[in-house]
Length: 128
Figure 1 (tube, rainbow, N blue to C red):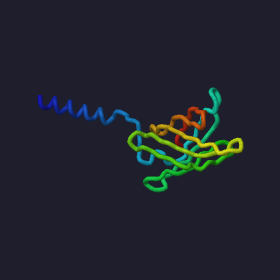
Figure 2 (cartoon, rainbow, N blue to C red):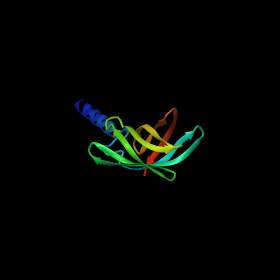
Figure 3 (cartoon, helix red, strand yellow):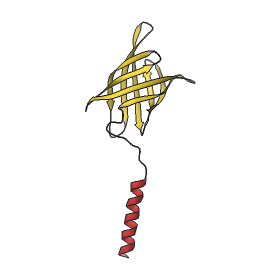
Figure 4 (tube, rainbow, N blue to C red):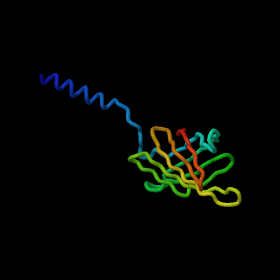
């Protein structure tokens, strides 16, 4: 009986160790991410995001869209949940447009939404 319980316990522990969980690492956002963002429903454009930890608390980088390189002005990453927030500014129609990006990182994929003023859309990028 004890042998059966021991075998059952070992099998249970082995099974739990092999089940996949979304990978969220402490340095998950660091690196180059590329993919698309939805400009308007049904139309997407290429985008890349380069992120790096400046120190253990400050995430920095740039957003590249077309010919533009836009410095990230503010970024945060929650290591426990994979939630990421990025802010940056772009010039558009003679004024500064402030973008807010809310997303989530799971494994090597970041997905979420971007917004500015009354416009918004989805994005999906993959870590290179």
